[in-house]
Length: 281
Image (cartoon, rainbow, N blue to C red; front, side, top):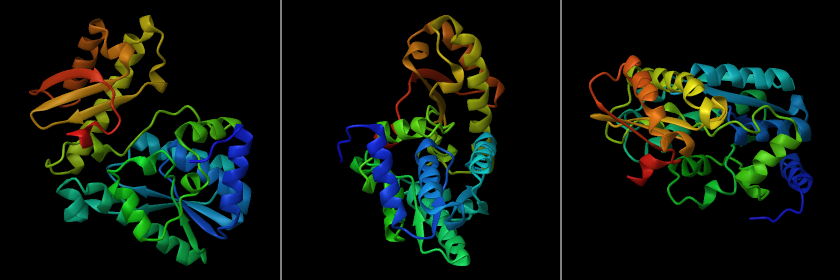
């Protein structure tokens, strides 16, 4: 991992890496990592030499899709929306530990098709230098098999450097909380269905609304808070930032939000947010 003396040096390293790609399609989830890759490609290659592709599926929250479209519009980047239909793939739908492999495979296959149509030779993802240190990343393996480039990782930008560059470039995603797809909220072994995904999406939106009131006394901005609603089958686990998880007075409002969203007859707990907590089990 590269050591940068300044954010400007990190940004220059990323632009230099991306400039060598030629025509590029960026797999754009709407998160801070892929948004920085989109912005870097637009700067290094010009908006005519790149495009963004976003997978549209029940696993992508509607609010995330709207934000992704606004982001590309603001940069003048052509934004392709593709129906990846990953729920038609049994390896994804059955929700085993390799689920992300099948998800990323459908996304990258769609991105490669768009790149071929546009006459572009490169597909890039938002994998950063911190991500590649995680030994359990089947999605990264799927992208590597398809020859996807990883400009953030290859230029040595870890998670902190990515956010710093996003802030330097005044990208609206610079302080956006990490947001994995909705399927990551569902315990392995529970089948992925549109109804189950929609219920998790409703629940997380309701919890965020409840946080507006619940976090006022602790000074936490609800829009920047980490929120996960984990569907465990016979139980639901709400994961939030420590200021909320460690304050029992906040919990009843969050549990009530879960009940209103359709999780009516299961046990509900509130715990501290842990990225990738499903993988740990």
